[in-house]
Image 1: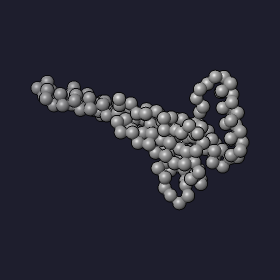
Image 2 (image 1 turned 135 degrees about the vertical axis):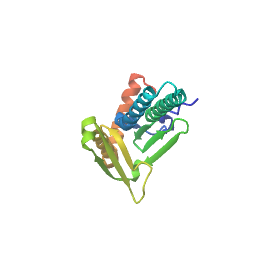
Image 3 (image 1 turned 60 degrees about the vertical axis):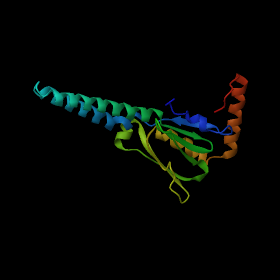
Image 4 (image 1 turned 45 degrees about the vertical axis):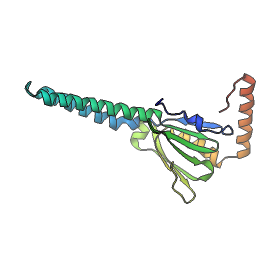
Length: 186
């Protein structure tokens, strides 16, 4: 009921899925630190208060519960957010209760840049900047992208590579899967 649709359900039959990822877990680091710090403060203050201040202690425990629920929601948002790249477009789905679908055609891409900070090198994530012809698209900056070098190479091949070789490779993969008896291509 509340589960968002799988991003593959938004793809056309003529599209070939190339990449399907979620953002790197490092996107949760600040929220984790914040939740742990707020919980520690609530527990510490609750234990330092005298027993006569039970109303304030109860309020602190309810505040701690709200911190936990908020953190659980942030993790759920991260979990359901997916980026799918096909041979024709970028599709990102977000949202736990209200689904939002962002899309950008591959043909609009004019330039790709990826950036990696020092912490990104340590944890294995980066930022991809996708520029398009004269417009700011919905997916122009993708932060906390896992394995950004592989992503960059794959997108570069899709955008700037030889289209004939890609089509041949795709038809060969399709034929191999059909020979193995697989139903779905992608």
